[in-house]
Amino acid sequence: MHEQAVKRSPQYAKLSHASAISLGLMGGRMYRGAVNKCVNLLVHYPEGCAANCAYCGLAKKRPGSYEEKSFIHVEWPIYHMSEIIEAINQAPSYVKRTCISMITNGKCRKDTITMTRQLKEKTSLPISILISPTILKENDLWEMKEAGADKIGIAIDLATPELFDQYRGKGVNGPHKWDTYWKVLAWALKIFGTPNVGAHLMVGMGETEEQMVSLMDKLWNMGVVSHLFSFFAEEGSRLADRPQPPWPTYLRVQLARYLIEENLSKYKEMAFDQMGRIVGFGLSRKELDEIIDLGRPFMTTGCLGDDGEVACNRPFGNCLPDVKQWNYPYPPNEEELALIREHIFTYPEI
Image 1 (cartoon, one colour):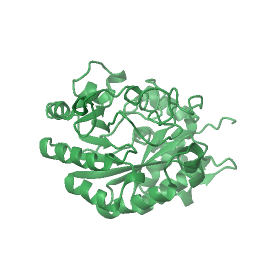
Image 2 (cartoon, rainbow, N blue to C red):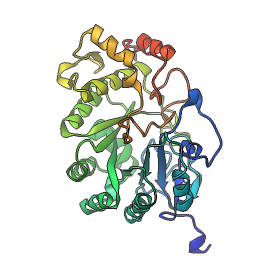
Image 3 (cartoon, rainbow, N blue to C red):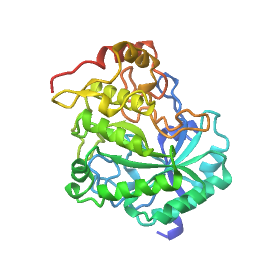
Protein backbone atom coordinates (compact mmCIF):
# COMPACT_ATOMS: atom_id res chain seq x y z
CA MET A 1 0.00 0.00 0.00
CA HIS A 2 1.37 3.42 -0.94
CA GLU A 3 2.04 5.87 1.88
CA GLN A 4 -0.44 8.41 0.54
CA ALA A 5 -3.22 5.80 0.65
CA VAL A 6 -2.82 5.22 4.38
CA LYS A 7 -5.17 7.23 6.58
CA ARG A 8 -3.11 8.80 9.34
CA SER A 9 -2.79 12.07 11.22
CA PRO A 10 -2.29 14.94 10.69
CA GLN A 11 -4.23 14.60 7.40
CA TYR A 12 -6.88 12.42 9.03
CA ALA A 13 -8.45 12.12 12.49
CA LYS A 14 -10.90 9.84 14.21
CA LEU A 15 -14.13 11.55 15.23
CA SER A 16 -16.37 10.34 18.05
CA HIS A 17 -19.71 8.90 17.01
CA ALA A 18 -21.59 11.60 18.98
CA SER A 19 -19.47 14.34 17.37
CA ALA A 20 -20.19 12.93 13.91
CA ILE A 21 -23.92 13.07 14.70
CA SER A 22 -23.63 16.66 16.00
CA LEU A 23 -21.78 17.74 12.85
CA GLY A 24 -24.25 16.03 10.53
CA LEU A 25 -21.67 13.55 9.22
CA MET A 26 -23.69 10.61 10.56
CA GLY A 27 -27.38 10.14 11.22
CA GLY A 28 -28.81 9.48 14.66
CA ARG A 29 -30.50 10.93 17.72
CA MET A 30 -29.66 10.71 21.39
CA TYR A 31 -31.72 9.88 24.47
CA ARG A 32 -33.76 12.74 25.93
CA GLY A 33 -32.61 15.07 23.16
CA ALA A 34 -29.02 15.18 24.42
CA VAL A 35 -26.54 16.99 22.21
CA ASN A 36 -22.76 16.68 22.03
CA LYS A 37 -21.32 20.17 22.51
CA CYS A 38 -17.67 19.35 21.85
CA VAL A 39 -16.10 18.03 18.64
CA ASN A 40 -13.92 15.20 19.94
CA LEU A 41 -11.03 14.24 17.67
CA LEU A 42 -8.58 11.40 18.19
CA VAL A 43 -5.14 11.43 16.59
CA HIS A 44 -4.88 8.34 14.39
CA TYR A 45 -2.16 6.02 13.10
CA PRO A 46 -2.67 2.51 11.71
CA GLU A 47 -0.13 1.15 14.19
CA GLY A 48 -2.08 2.64 17.09
CA CYS A 49 -1.09 3.44 20.67
CA ALA A 50 2.00 2.08 22.44
CA ALA A 51 0.31 2.15 25.86
CA ASN A 52 -1.56 -0.78 27.37
CA CYS A 53 -3.86 0.74 30.00
CA ALA A 54 -6.01 -2.03 31.45
CA TYR A 55 -9.34 -0.25 30.98
CA CYS A 56 -8.77 1.43 27.61
CA GLY A 57 -10.38 0.39 24.34
CA LEU A 58 -7.24 1.51 22.48
CA ALA A 59 -4.86 -0.63 24.56
CA LYS A 60 -2.06 -2.14 22.51
CA LYS A 61 -2.87 -5.71 23.57
CA ARG A 62 -6.65 -5.46 23.19
CA PRO A 63 -7.65 -7.88 20.40
CA GLY A 64 -8.47 -6.53 16.96
CA SER A 65 -7.00 -4.04 14.50
CA TYR A 66 -6.40 -0.56 15.84
CA GLU A 67 -8.59 1.08 13.21
CA GLU A 68 -11.58 -1.03 14.29
CA LYS A 69 -11.14 -0.65 18.05
CA SER A 70 -13.92 1.16 19.86
CA PHE A 71 -13.06 3.86 22.36
CA ILE A 72 -15.39 4.80 25.23
CA HIS A 73 -17.80 2.18 23.84
CA VAL A 74 -18.45 3.74 20.44
CA GLU A 75 -16.94 3.63 17.00
CA TRP A 76 -14.70 6.51 15.94
CA PRO A 77 -14.97 6.85 12.16
CA ILE A 78 -12.00 8.36 10.29
CA TYR A 79 -12.42 11.62 8.36
CA HIS A 80 -10.09 13.87 6.43
CA MET A 81 -9.31 17.03 8.39
CA SER A 82 -10.68 19.19 5.58
CA GLU A 83 -14.05 17.44 5.90
CA ILE A 84 -14.02 17.88 9.69
CA ILE A 85 -13.15 21.57 9.38
CA GLU A 86 -15.92 22.15 6.85
CA ALA A 87 -18.42 20.43 9.15
CA ILE A 88 -17.26 22.45 12.18
CA ASN A 89 -17.82 25.67 10.24
CA GLN A 90 -21.41 24.59 9.56
CA ALA A 91 -22.02 23.17 13.05
CA PRO A 92 -25.14 23.93 15.11
CA SER A 93 -24.78 26.80 17.59
CA TYR A 94 -24.72 24.38 20.54
CA VAL A 95 -21.26 23.12 19.46
CA LYS A 96 -18.87 25.19 21.58
CA ARG A 97 -15.40 23.58 21.51
CA THR A 98 -13.05 21.19 19.75
CA CYS A 99 -10.81 18.74 21.63
CA ILE A 100 -7.91 16.75 20.20
CA SER A 101 -7.04 13.58 22.14
CA MET A 102 -3.48 12.36 21.79
CA ILE A 103 -2.34 8.76 21.99
CA THR A 104 1.03 7.38 23.10
CA ASN A 105 2.84 7.39 19.77
CA GLY A 106 6.05 9.28 19.06
CA LYS A 107 4.61 10.95 15.94
CA CYS A 108 1.76 12.38 17.96
CA ARG A 109 3.60 15.41 19.40
CA LYS A 110 4.31 17.10 16.09
CA ASP A 111 1.04 16.06 14.43
CA THR A 112 -1.15 17.28 17.29
CA ILE A 113 0.44 20.72 17.03
CA THR A 114 -0.11 20.71 13.24
CA MET A 115 -3.78 19.78 13.70
CA THR A 116 -4.24 22.42 16.40
CA ARG A 117 -2.79 25.10 14.16
CA GLN A 118 -5.03 24.01 11.30
CA LEU A 119 -8.17 24.19 13.48
CA LYS A 120 -7.15 27.58 14.88
CA GLU A 121 -6.58 29.05 11.43
CA LYS A 122 -9.70 27.63 9.78
CA THR A 123 -12.38 27.48 12.51
CA SER A 124 -13.60 29.75 15.30
CA LEU A 125 -14.11 27.22 18.11
CA PRO A 126 -11.73 27.20 21.10
CA ILE A 127 -9.43 24.18 21.18
CA SER A 128 -8.52 21.79 24.02
CA ILE A 129 -5.89 19.07 23.88
CA LEU A 130 -6.03 15.91 25.98
CA ILE A 131 -2.32 15.28 26.13
CA SER A 132 -0.17 12.17 26.53
CA PRO A 133 2.45 13.24 29.13
CA THR A 134 4.66 10.19 28.54
CA ILE A 135 5.85 11.45 25.13
CA LEU A 136 5.99 15.21 25.84
CA LYS A 137 8.67 17.75 26.68
CA GLU A 138 7.91 21.12 28.25
CA ASN A 139 8.50 22.92 24.98
CA ASP A 140 5.74 20.86 23.33
CA LEU A 141 3.19 22.52 25.62
CA TRP A 142 4.50 25.97 24.72
CA GLU A 143 4.10 25.04 21.05
CA MET A 144 0.54 23.81 21.68
CA LYS A 145 -0.36 27.14 23.21
CA GLU A 146 1.31 29.06 20.41
CA ALA A 147 -0.58 26.91 17.86
CA GLY A 148 -3.90 27.97 19.40
CA ALA A 149 -4.91 25.60 22.21
CA ASP A 150 -6.40 27.35 25.25
CA LYS A 151 -7.00 24.37 27.57
CA ILE A 152 -5.11 21.19 28.46
CA GLY A 153 -6.47 17.95 29.87
CA ILE A 154 -4.39 15.25 31.55
CA ALA A 155 -5.87 11.80 32.19
CA ILE A 156 -4.42 10.94 35.58
CA ASP A 157 -7.42 8.60 35.95
CA LEU A 158 -6.24 6.72 39.04
CA ALA A 159 -6.45 8.14 42.57
CA THR A 160 -3.19 6.71 43.97
CA PRO A 161 0.34 6.01 42.66
CA GLU A 162 -0.13 2.30 43.39
CA LEU A 163 -3.33 2.01 41.34
CA PHE A 164 -1.78 4.07 38.53
CA ASP A 165 1.18 1.71 38.35
CA GLN A 166 -1.07 -1.36 38.52
CA TYR A 167 -3.38 -0.35 35.67
CA ARG A 168 -1.22 1.95 33.51
CA GLY A 169 2.40 1.22 34.36
CA LYS A 170 4.41 -1.83 35.34
CA GLY A 171 1.30 -3.87 36.20
CA VAL A 172 0.32 -4.00 32.51
CA ASN A 173 3.78 -3.56 30.95
CA GLY A 174 2.77 -0.02 30.11
CA PRO A 175 5.02 3.04 29.69
CA HIS A 176 3.22 5.52 31.93
CA LYS A 177 4.61 6.77 35.24
CA TRP A 178 2.76 8.65 37.99
CA ASP A 179 5.62 11.10 38.55
CA THR A 180 5.76 11.96 34.84
CA TYR A 181 2.08 12.86 34.81
CA TRP A 182 2.45 15.18 37.79
CA LYS A 183 5.56 16.80 36.32
CA VAL A 184 3.71 17.54 33.09
CA LEU A 185 0.69 18.76 35.08
CA ALA A 186 2.96 21.36 36.70
CA TRP A 187 4.24 22.43 33.26
CA ALA A 188 0.67 22.78 31.99
CA LEU A 189 -0.28 24.97 34.95
CA LYS A 190 2.74 27.19 34.36
CA ILE A 191 2.02 27.56 30.65
CA PHE A 192 -1.79 27.59 30.45
CA GLY A 193 -2.68 28.80 33.95
CA THR A 194 -5.79 28.35 36.09
CA PRO A 195 -8.56 27.37 35.25
CA ASN A 196 -7.28 26.06 31.93
CA VAL A 197 -5.86 22.73 33.12
CA GLY A 198 -8.13 19.78 33.87
CA ALA A 199 -7.40 16.33 35.28
CA HIS A 200 -9.48 13.33 34.21
CA LEU A 201 -10.26 11.13 37.22
CA MET A 202 -12.01 7.75 37.07
CA VAL A 203 -14.05 6.42 39.98
CA GLY A 204 -14.32 2.67 40.48
CA MET A 205 -10.75 1.43 40.15
CA GLY A 206 -10.29 0.20 43.71
CA GLU A 207 -9.80 3.57 45.41
CA THR A 208 -11.89 4.70 48.37
CA GLU A 209 -14.17 7.70 48.19
CA GLU A 210 -11.83 9.40 50.65
CA GLN A 211 -8.79 8.85 48.41
CA MET A 212 -10.61 10.38 45.42
CA VAL A 213 -11.88 13.35 47.45
CA SER A 214 -8.39 13.96 48.83
CA LEU A 215 -6.99 13.98 45.29
CA MET A 216 -9.68 16.35 43.99
CA ASP A 217 -9.01 18.69 46.90
CA LYS A 218 -5.26 18.62 46.19
CA LEU A 219 -5.82 19.36 42.52
CA TRP A 220 -8.22 22.23 43.25
CA ASN A 221 -5.72 23.81 45.64
CA MET A 222 -3.12 23.62 42.84
CA GLY A 223 -5.50 25.33 40.42
CA VAL A 224 -6.54 22.20 38.48
CA VAL A 225 -10.20 21.32 37.87
CA SER A 226 -11.37 17.70 38.04
CA HIS A 227 -13.22 16.06 35.16
CA LEU A 228 -14.95 13.03 36.63
CA PHE A 229 -15.57 9.73 34.89
CA SER A 230 -16.99 6.45 36.10
CA PHE A 231 -15.31 3.19 35.20
CA PHE A 232 -17.41 1.56 32.46
CA ALA A 233 -15.89 -1.67 31.17
CA GLU A 234 -14.78 -1.72 27.54
CA GLU A 235 -15.65 -4.98 25.81
CA GLY A 236 -12.55 -7.02 25.07
CA SER A 237 -10.34 -4.99 27.42
CA ARG A 238 -8.38 -6.52 30.28
CA LEU A 239 -11.04 -5.30 32.73
CA ALA A 240 -14.06 -6.25 30.61
CA ASP A 241 -15.72 -8.11 33.51
CA ARG A 242 -15.22 -5.43 36.14
CA PRO A 243 -18.50 -3.79 37.31
CA GLN A 244 -19.14 -0.08 37.48
CA PRO A 245 -18.74 1.53 40.91
CA PRO A 246 -21.90 1.61 43.04
CA TRP A 247 -24.08 4.48 41.86
CA PRO A 248 -24.33 6.03 45.38
CA THR A 249 -20.51 6.10 45.54
CA TYR A 250 -20.28 7.99 42.27
CA LEU A 251 -23.04 10.42 43.31
CA ARG A 252 -21.22 11.22 46.55
CA VAL A 253 -17.91 11.81 44.77
CA GLN A 254 -19.66 14.07 42.26
CA LEU A 255 -21.24 16.07 45.07
CA ALA A 256 -17.89 16.34 46.88
CA ARG A 257 -16.21 17.64 43.71
CA TYR A 258 -18.92 20.26 43.26
CA LEU A 259 -18.62 21.45 46.88
CA ILE A 260 -14.82 21.67 46.64
CA GLU A 261 -14.77 23.53 43.32
CA GLU A 262 -17.55 25.90 44.38
CA ASN A 263 -15.53 26.59 47.57
CA LEU A 264 -18.42 25.37 49.72
CA SER A 265 -16.45 22.66 51.53
CA LYS A 266 -13.02 21.01 51.71
CA TYR A 267 -11.60 17.55 52.18
CA LYS A 268 -10.60 18.33 55.76
CA GLU A 269 -14.20 19.40 56.55
CA MET A 270 -15.70 16.13 55.31
CA ALA A 271 -16.13 12.92 57.32
CA PHE A 272 -15.52 9.33 56.21
CA ASP A 273 -16.40 5.92 57.65
CA GLN A 274 -14.03 2.98 58.14
CA MET A 275 -14.48 1.98 54.49
CA GLY A 276 -13.50 5.45 53.34
CA ARG A 277 -17.05 6.38 52.30
CA ILE A 278 -18.24 9.97 52.69
CA VAL A 279 -20.63 10.26 55.64
CA GLY A 280 -20.39 14.04 56.13
CA PHE A 281 -19.85 16.80 53.58
CA GLY A 282 -19.18 19.66 55.98
CA LEU A 283 -22.62 21.18 55.41
CA SER A 284 -26.03 20.76 57.02
CA ARG A 285 -28.51 18.33 55.47
CA LYS A 286 -30.73 21.28 54.52
CA GLU A 287 -27.84 22.95 52.67
CA LEU A 288 -26.97 19.67 50.95
CA ASP A 289 -30.56 19.10 49.87
CA GLU A 290 -30.67 22.56 48.26
CA ILE A 291 -27.45 21.86 46.35
CA ILE A 292 -28.62 18.40 45.25
CA ASP A 293 -31.84 19.97 43.95
CA LEU A 294 -29.77 22.12 41.59
CA GLY A 295 -28.83 18.97 39.67
CA ARG A 296 -25.55 20.55 38.53
CA PRO A 297 -23.24 18.45 40.74
CA PHE A 298 -24.28 15.35 38.78
CA MET A 299 -23.76 16.72 35.29
CA THR A 300 -20.68 15.94 33.21
CA THR A 301 -17.60 17.95 34.12
CA GLY A 302 -15.20 18.97 31.37
CA CYS A 303 -13.73 21.91 29.50
CA LEU A 304 -15.99 24.95 29.25
CA GLY A 305 -17.19 26.71 26.13
CA ASP A 306 -17.04 30.46 25.68
CA ASP A 307 -20.48 30.66 27.33
CA GLY A 308 -19.02 29.42 30.63
CA GLU A 309 -20.95 26.13 30.47
CA VAL A 310 -19.42 22.66 30.08
CA ALA A 311 -18.77 22.01 26.39
CA CYS A 312 -17.18 18.58 26.77
CA ASN A 313 -20.39 16.92 27.99
CA ARG A 314 -19.67 13.41 26.55
CA PRO A 315 -23.28 12.14 26.32
CA PHE A 316 -23.55 8.59 27.71
CA GLY A 317 -19.80 8.08 27.73
CA ASN A 318 -20.03 6.57 31.22
CA CYS A 319 -23.19 4.50 30.96
CA LEU A 320 -26.08 3.46 28.77
CA PRO A 321 -28.93 5.99 28.37
CA ASP A 322 -31.27 5.71 31.37
CA VAL A 323 -32.85 7.82 34.09
CA LYS A 324 -29.99 6.62 36.32
CA GLN A 325 -26.78 7.97 34.82
CA TRP A 326 -23.21 8.29 35.99
CA ASN A 327 -22.79 11.67 34.21
CA TYR A 328 -25.85 13.62 33.08
CA PRO A 329 -25.19 15.49 29.80
CA TYR A 330 -28.12 17.81 30.57
CA PRO A 331 -29.75 19.06 33.81
CA PRO A 332 -31.41 16.09 35.55
CA ASN A 333 -35.19 16.30 35.43
CA GLU A 334 -37.44 15.75 38.46
CA GLU A 335 -37.65 12.00 37.95
CA GLU A 336 -33.86 11.78 37.78
CA LEU A 337 -33.41 14.07 40.78
CA ALA A 338 -35.81 11.93 42.81
CA LEU A 339 -33.64 8.87 42.10
CA ILE A 340 -30.50 10.79 43.09
CA ARG A 341 -32.08 11.90 46.39
CA GLU A 342 -33.18 8.33 47.06
CA HIS A 343 -29.73 6.81 46.54
CA ILE A 344 -27.01 9.33 47.38
CA PHE A 345 -27.06 8.73 51.12
CA THR A 346 -27.38 4.94 50.90
CA TYR A 347 -24.43 2.70 51.75
CA PRO A 348 -24.89 -0.77 50.26
CA GLU A 349 -22.87 -3.52 51.88
CA ILE A 350 -19.82 -4.34 49.74
